[in-house]
Amino acid sequence: MTASSKMAGVLSSGMHLLNGVYQVNRVLGQGGFGITYQGIDTRLNRPVALKEFFPEGCWRDGTTVISAGRWTVKTYSDAKQRFLQEGQTLGQFNHPGIVRVFYYFEENNTAYMVMEYLKGLSLADLLKKRGGKMSQAEALHYIQKISQALEVLHQSQFLHRDLKPDNIMLTKDERVVLIDFGAARDFTNRHSKRFTAMFTPGYAPLEQYGQALKFGTFTDIYALGATLYHMLTGIVPPSAVERAAGVELKPVCQLNDRVSPHVSLAISQALAMEVTDRIQSVAKFLHLLRLDNHNLETIVVGSNHFYESAKDPWSAFKPNESSYTSEKRENVSNSWF
Ligand SMILES: Nc1ncnc2c1ncn2[C@@H]1O[C@H](COP(=O)(O)OP(=O)(O)OP(=O)(O)O)[C@@H](O)[C@H]1O
Ligand SMILES: [Mg+2]
Image 1 (cartoon, rainbow, N blue to C red):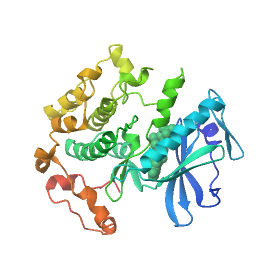
Image 2: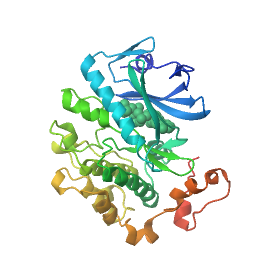
Image 3: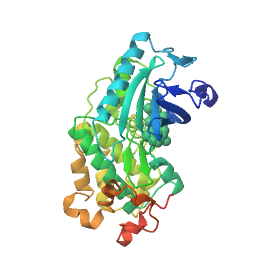
């Protein structure tokens, strides 16, 4: 599908939803399952991100979304329910590392999720700005925050399923936030023979290609390992299918000699093809990266800073004020703005 035909289905800027409560503005992104708009909560007069359920292949008649392509009325309606469930689940979290969902509703024969608008850029954008990769200190700083959020999800028996630099937002007030949870994809995986954008090759373990649905925390660990691999080498690992066919996954330390051996080893163990060989929990991954509690003082960069903006919402707007104290901390301050 070309970019122009893809854009043909988006709601036009200025449109209202829910009797004028929300106004749709520009498109932030469009993927296999939805269109994300920047919008406004007109009652509170604050920006929001509005995600519309709009699976690839469907089309729009006026504002109404029509199930089409491989989507029957039934599979479309079931997937829409999953999307709404995703909104309900996410709405229950209150963690700085998990995007806040304020509301979800149905309209235009589709569903909408109203989220906080995250001002900043994605980790993928930051990597591009850095020329492809970043230092170990900076990468571990982000990985620790991502892991903290992932651990909260996992403790609630929820998986992300599509962790990758594009789905990690870095905000101006220094939050590192997971977005784009893949519950709807799970449904499609079970009911469709065809693969669409259910996951992203390179970050997805082999079990996500199959129909067996033996997912677990280890599924997100693979993606977390692939994300760190990308951050340190500038290279997306070969897909699990390519690896199964014999393509070698070069260890990180072979591609970047500034990476510590224990970090390279932890990534290899997170990227084990066999579920049983793979690191099973976020805690174990952090331990192998020496980012667990015992080692925080030596490795963690800006740990408490993560929560400070919650205490003082204006801290992000104060120039020349930083709680970064060590030299390492200065290295990872948000110089990308
Ligand atoms: N809460 C948000 N605040 C600000 N920007 C956001 C927010 N959510 C998403 N975005 C932006 O919109 C883009 C697309 O959103 P998202 O990742 O949720 O969906 P997608 O990848 O396009 O679609 P799919 O769910 O089909 O994979 C993101 O890459 C990000 O730039
Ligand atoms: Mg995305």
